[in-house]
Image (cartoon, rainbow, N blue to C red; front, top):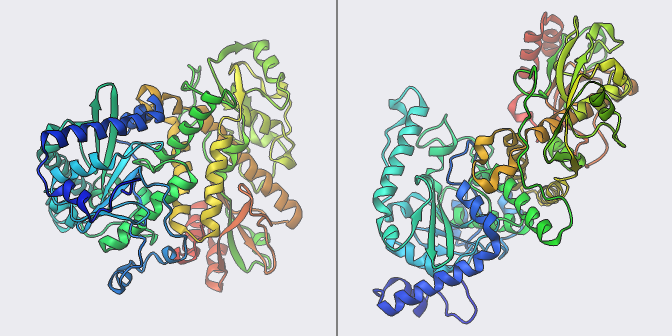
Length: 622
């Protein structure tokens, strides 16, 4: 790691690091370096430490990355070794120095900064890895400092080799994955002794990520070691030893062609590039999972707002209050609906098109006002009065209402009912968010049912004392990062950003993901429910507009996507690149065989099979 006033890694500094036994004086200097590290890291505040502690608990998401450590021109051999499945890497900008000082990458050939500077030759023992970490004096960046070990040859140098068996010998790949994870933990516990003897402490059981901390005086420094060849032991349950598939966070997805190149140096370069990208555009290092990365971005904003006293900084969680008659499953379910097409749908139809809201959850997260604080429980007229008190719709909260029977309303027959809890033949009493309460009062043309508050028979409510756009800056940072990735053709980072906001919003609902004291404010199930309801309502509004303008109705909708049978020249997508607008996701030509399949479909199951068969994997959009 290049530091002001120090010699290059090929000189005496490197020799001192690896070739000389540490004298007592050198040991004292090393301790001093640790203190300097922790002093510098103290700027991350206690919340960084808490966030780091929280990562010790396993979470059902992905964390992996791809960067660009050796910025020098690669040799022809290295160029040819790059994974042909990652062609976008040649198009995207080279690694910046934004992650330098916060992360290093270790291969069998040596250690590197994310921007590409070679630090040392081979780090061929755990003792040398300890010396490298202490010498590098890495500081946190929204997450603890990171050391990425890339390639199985580097792992072999540390004795981190496991042999869980062959995928052909097991019927359930989860058995192999679990066996490998347990064996890796045992191997790490047996080989990390030199680091533990040197003063490091493990935070949780070691696995594909090793969480380490070291205290000197009143300062504690934290380092996470990511072991790239073994991320599969955590991420996926359906692939084996030599068949890495699925999405693995910052490391990418082998099936999508965004995983690291196969050879170590090109892999290290791409990993370095991705680490640097995260540092530059997100302001944080990638977390062990995309959701943790999303949380780290929000925590950084919270710290800035707390220091400045400007903006909303939510510090407490928002668990669902006790509800009478709480609905089963999600408070605000995502929509999933299909209908059998008729002759009008197939008239002049030549193509099957799926449109979806561009980055729907991210768009809604930036638009909505979210509640926080201790909610008030209201009943009867007090609840009704509260619903009518908002200047821009109902205040943030939960409302126990009665949804009228769908058949009693003048609703379009070729759309799903406006709320997933609504039934066609009978009223339903249920709880809804303020977003749904407002949506139901919208006109039928705007995606609602045209209800008055009295029509909804509000009997009970939980209303929050404060509300505001708590995720506005968070959404802006992710939105601008996504824009850069799209404009530069950086498919890997675009996919990773999608995983960050989807993963973070998705895991707001689960308190087990945020057990550490300083992470509990991320438990916001009502925020997630409001985002889902908002996306659902916006999609229905668009479907109503398309029907007015074209006479076309969807045959299927799932979450934020809508499938249409269209004629030549018909375009139902929005002419806008803004988030939340409809873009074409998939498109396929209707052959005679497909038309016959749709014509003969007798039920929704057969329609779903026909649609799935029409959209082949090669025709999928973003």
